[in-house]
Length: 380
Image (cartoon, rainbow, N blue to C red):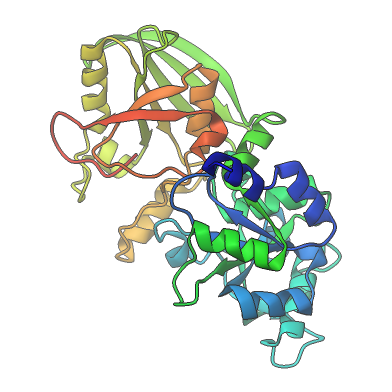
């Protein structure tokens, strides 16, 4: 059996994973079918009991978290823990909680399972939980894995698709040395415990066949001092309202890879010229000139969906926190814009080469990277 056949055998289809999830079985979620990856042991919250929690504690050994959607978080009165949320590659973590009644210390497998059921069950609300506690909720972004390719979003997407409460329990799987488990360990783990493995990339592809969260809302032609004539398209994220811009130069339909700049807009650097490590403040202008010189290419400019983006940024800076919410997993809207424009193969305009989670799920491939002609860049 060749490596590809073995991989196909090891990875469950999303439909098969949904069957297992609906039946109350545990499963593993990892990023992609290829390359380096880590994984989480998961179960839908509606089926979580003390046996499942004990299995996570005994075999997975990572931090046990409850993934919920934004609506449920609002019902429970849970707010983001800003410092943790802003950490690179992290999910939106809230304050810790546990059930107000029906538990003892709160730390036992039984107590944690009970707290999970109370927090995830729509029949209960904010008066039924207390904080701090021994359970760590994570809030999935609106739009799920089509916006952010994270395991928080993936398990909530699966719960919704299965028709269960929109919540799941996840626990990072550690190897025998206490480090995050790699692909080989995850596949052996799944075989030993007779559970399925699913990938976020496959889930994204599965959702794309059934759902799109972007639509075009306007188009103009304009002339710029940065590269002449451009076609500008405005896209709307219908899951969590925000408008995004695509700047197009030339014909994108030919089969050669397209020069693409994916840019998360930051008012401090892009508009006000703030000097930050890894940012020059003129990446958009440089990209426009380079694409104009190429004669063909695309810039996707992404905005934060929050209506308080600027005040949030100011508050973080006032607190001495210079980190950014724009992270490598939050590219889903941009990927869908590329899909809408028929761009499948691209040369990414960036000084940083990174592994992008779930890229295969969008049918996208990176043929190469091209660095900016000047300055530094730390954004994909």
